[in-house]
Image (cartoon, rainbow, N blue to C red):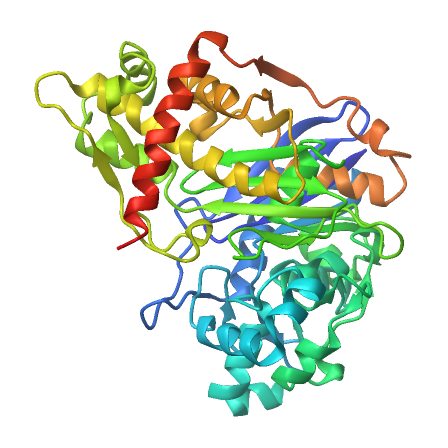
Length: 495
């Protein structure tokens, strides 16, 4: 018996089959084979055709069937998706326009206007965020700039809601999804009517709310025939990519955090304390396991644009003759703290963690006599780790006190140097696992369908690959280097 996980990203859609009994992935497929296109008609815009996500998903499922896997054994379906996007459907269930996805920044001015008009205190105490550039502001942009399209909208939704609609025929969303769109009132634990009223979003355009973990609908006969999955199979899990990444790593309880280090870096921590960052450098959403009554589980999300992309830039421009494993080996030959060389990795646009400032990447303290390639490579990885520590310190101010960081063994976390540096800086143990978003969605679906009876059962077979403890001998030099790095960052923010 299998559970099917679907992970809808902006660069690809990955599907995976989880063998429910063993908890192991038996097959997966990613489409398209090259990066999915993003339409950028104007600077700062980013759009995709929602129907392309369905196409990529369908291709992946057919590939698994062609490989000989019996999709008739699929007993549950789960969905993970790129957060904060806007999909608008007409009454026939067709997209009114292309989806405005997470990295589109056109609605920033509308979010700023809403913060001022609604009031800072109201937003921080009820939304735990500024309206910012999230789904509600994107919909408001459509209403202001494309009134004909807005008038045709029957329901607006997130990318994962769209896939669920295509599978089940039910136009629904989740409370955690509402919070991602900055449409959830954390104080009253209901839809934030005052945000909808300010933007003029009619109540009949909202989707009904269903549990994030639980049966949300069942596969339509037409969808089942197209995909080769049994009709009536429950769709029983839905979560944004970062809450789902945390779920996939069994990060469910207050104080637990997860981290990723791909092109950008993300730290996501769980708390039960509804507290906003006054400068909105990190964002708070409902966690996928949160109840809609009682004490909620909240996810605090930190995003750093310039992490893995900084390491890849150094690879291309400083060490093109080396592979990443060889870069790591050379970096270790430089001393802890890189002999005073500092790198600030913030060269990939405005950083939310820096209050939407774009400082550019910087190399500080370069000595043409003492420093060589190894120092640059080590300073790069340390600088990326410093940026994680900087963000985690903000999260600590909000009540998170992590002693364990869980991560998938991928990207920056493949580097022993980076892992040990981060563990030491944060005084936290790092645990590495072999899982991903599609497997997290599959595991969640089996839980939501009642096949797994508890989270303990769902994660009983999640294998831990490695544990990294802080390096006591590195603590003092790293703290000293971090202090200098933080001062340089403070100086750069003055200009």
